[in-house]
Image (cartoon, rainbow, N blue to C red):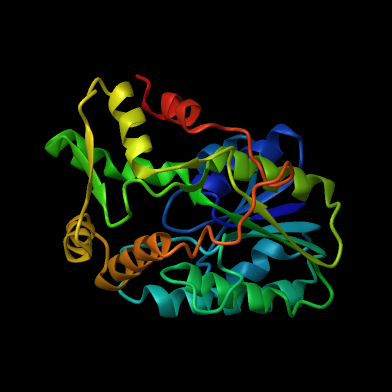
Length: 290
């Protein structure tokens, strides 16, 4: 049995699907978003809140391996506190149920204390998982997800511009969630890691926001689409207008400014092992094609 957290999310849903296609026994946790499609495909579905240890015990009990994630509930006004609570609940439930192989989703740069934005919580999470003495833990530290670029589509469609606080010509690593899910599913199925390990997933190349914007514009029939570097206060206001809590919006602005400072790329070197296959153009074609 393989337990999968975040099965309603971008990565967890793909991991669960890939494991079911491999004919693995899969158990997922259902909370706000229903997982009927996974149930129909053969997954065991348990209901509960990932903030509660008892719900996580039900998810992990009897499992040979588990995917653990800290989902991004960007509307949560207590975003930081609740992610910390969930991290503690995950670590406690894993310890109590004795899951032997754990794959944890994290982010490049989260292994360093003081990470800006949401990765700060991932640093704390990684530290907790490192104390699971009886479990084999593999932390997958991904570059920025290409999927995040799609959040700008409402701005692009209404204002015919793309923008954020990230410098337009700064190239940084991006990876597709389908590649992260593929790595996670494969390692959960093989359970070929021992001790506490980490692996970066960096995509095939560094990409700037200006390059990404040109690629998006080309596919949307907007060849003149431009990228604008926005003041942090304007970015926060736009994120708040999109439904994010004040705390989550502030953290995402911190993350963008951290990208500008090189936090998520300094010292990061792409190798054959850390390179994932999906190129930005391929991802965008799949996401934006009618």
